[in-house]
Every structure is written in C-alpha cells, then in structure tokens.
Amino acid sequence: MRHLIDPLDLNLAETGRLLDLAEEIMNRQGEFAHCCQGKILASLFFEPSTRTRLSFESAMLRLGGQTLGFAGAQSSSAAKGESVADTIRMISCYADIAAMRHFKEGAPFVAARYGKIPVINAGDGGHQHPTQTLTDLFTIRRCRGGVDGLTIGLCGDLKFGRTVHSLIKSLVRYRNVRFVFISPEELRVPGYILKEVVEPSGHPWQEARRMEEVMPQLDVLYMTRVQRERFFNEEDYVRLKDSYILTPEKLGAGKGELAVLHPLPRVNEIDQRVDQDPRALYFEQARGGVFVRMALILSLLGLAPGVLEEREWQGA
Image 1 (spheres, rainbow, N blue to C red):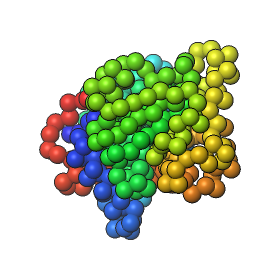
Image 2: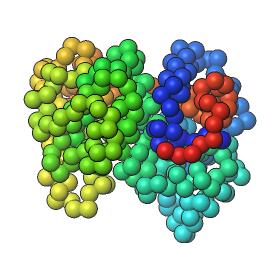
Image 3: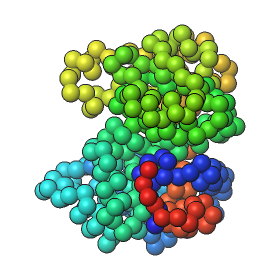
C-alpha cells in the first residue's frame, strides 16, 4: 500500500506519469466518470480549508465515488481527545482512502503508519503540502512545456509556507532550475531547507528583498500570502502582511511568458487588476488541482496501473 505524505514519496518518474494521467483526465473527463464507483474518500480536515477540501471531494465525485468526513477538529472526536492513530483506525473501517489536513506537523505520517487505507497529506502545519506541489508542477508543465531550465521566484512567506517547502523539495529534482527567494528577513526560507535540500542539489539560488529587482529574471513567480495563523504575535503579522503586493505596474517588468502562480487563498498580495493579465494562472492552477487529485486517487487505489511502482511505502 502506498501513501502520499511527502512529495518525495513519489519518485520523478512516478510524478511524471501521474501528471500525464491528470492531463489525460482533463482532456477525457467522461471516460473516468465511473472509475471509483463504490469507493469512499474520507475527508479529514482538522484545520480550515476551502480549495483543498472541496478539490478532493470534487475529484472523488467526478470519479463516481462518494465522500464523508469533517471540516474542523471541533467536528470530530479529536475535540474529545481522540488520537490521530485511533481516528485513522476508525476511518479505515468506513472508507477506502483518506485525505488529511492537520495543524500538527507529522500527523498524516502517523495516520499512514496506523491506518489500513492509503493516506494523502492535504497539509500538515507549516511542513508539507504534496498535492499542492503536484498541482503546481502540473500548471508549470502545461504553461511552460516542462520544468527543466526555469528560473523560479518564490515570494512572501517562505518561512511558514508549507506549499513553498514542498515545491522546493520537488523542484530540485529537475535539471538546471534556478531559485530566487523573495521575502523579508523575518520570513526567509528556513535554514534547514537551504542546507538539506537546495545546497546539496547544486542548483543556483539567491535571496532578494525587493520583488522589482528580480522580476525581469523570472520564468515563474510563485506568490504566497503572509499567514496570520502561523504568527504568535499579532504585531509581527500586521508589520509584515503587506510586504509584497503584486500590481500590474510591477508585473510590467516581467517576461511576456512569465507564469504567475499562487496556492490561494489570496488576501491582498496580488492586486485584483492582475487577474486580467493572461500571465495570471492561479485560478487555472486551482482548476488543475482537481484533475491532479483525481489521478492521485486512482493511482493510490490501484485503479491506474503503471503509474506507481510496486514497492512498499517507506516514508520520505
């Protein structure tokens, strides 16, 4: 049985085949409408979510399956003190596959150890968000024809942003990728990401404090919001929340083929006028996430032969 807890749980070949399947599903949706008939997805969201939770549920429904679950810790027995291990043991009796978002880093990993069904990490604290990473790669491949050789700017909250951490871990596996990390000093990429992931890869990287300085270099600009829920101090959040706001004027210095991505939700870090620019792909990115999750569900349930290799999940 395989799980997806960390983006590196899929090797590069598996990632490519899964994204190929997502493309096939996008182009031939009707042919996949009954693939999961009789299957149930458990949507276990201990932390608030709109896009990810609904995307998973939409994916399962589009495959002909059903969903059950909850959208907050207070709606589950976690409010009574039930452990993650016991929760997933119980859910394994009711569902065929589970998507879990949790405020504690490592909770989906624990679920994968104790559950008897495939577990998908839908975001754990400030740690990882592998299905968002797959969605990001899917969008980059579709708009740029591939990932190799791109200069990718990641902007905003690079310290607490689990989408950023997951994406960096995956991008270092591609060839000739160059990183530009754009953030205030307080929200820099964590040192362990640089030392354990980026530097050993040999990919060049630089840090910048002003978006305008590096905009002309970028092939992809990955915007993120400053996450209020990750701050212990409200004053720090208020001071940093408007550090970077992408406007049409700033975007004007970017390449004509620049792709602007955002994992969403957006607060005010992208001016709404930017939405009219054809380079703004974040809503198309969200749409693609449904097809990526459809492909992942099929693969983990063993309904898409040839995508995942026959090997036991070990965790990353």
